[in-house]
Image (cartoon, one colour):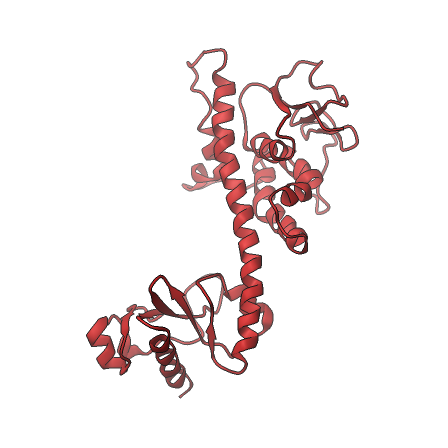
Length: 304
């Protein structure tokens, strides 16, 4: 039965019920969000989904709390918050509602759970190490700063703050899912470009996009540089060795470092070369032909 009510607790809010509400209101836009601790509201019934309140977890009766003794744990023993439980039961439906292709849904569901949902679960349960100066900048902590201050006593202050925070939380979830879906689309395009490159050390892409994951996944260790259009220009970029840090498979030529326009054209011998970063990880040219010629010169020097 489609729920008429989405019930969570009243009072101060946390990230887990905010993000749970993001998921559920996308799936059930006609349902009314009710914030209450009254027994008649937090008792399971056919017309509602209850989360982060109620003292029970039962997917069949659609109650998703994690504060009770014997609260549910993930297979690895890490705790759920209401967000993790709601994502477990409704995440795949949410991705379908966001028009994520079915072929990519399971991978995106898992990556979002690991990279976004789990940190919220851990923080809500006090199971994350949040010491240090950056702790107040974590997303759950920032959302909680939107709670009313202590002497804002209007009867609707907490509900108004909740819904204001909800719109911000929604933006982050939707952006993260959209970015994950875009990465999967990019992977398909990069795989096609790798096949087209063959044995060449130059990967040419139809536009700027995330490419390193697909290059690593394909085992394309022979690739050294990437050429792609950017606006009216073309870029020539390096390929990082690791996800973190700046070490690359091959640097652009040292003679190009920090040069622009005529000086770079003279140093490279390529008409239309316009820029090379002093760090030698990216360069630019006016035309595709110039960018590819620069790439060929960079490959020759790297392989010499």
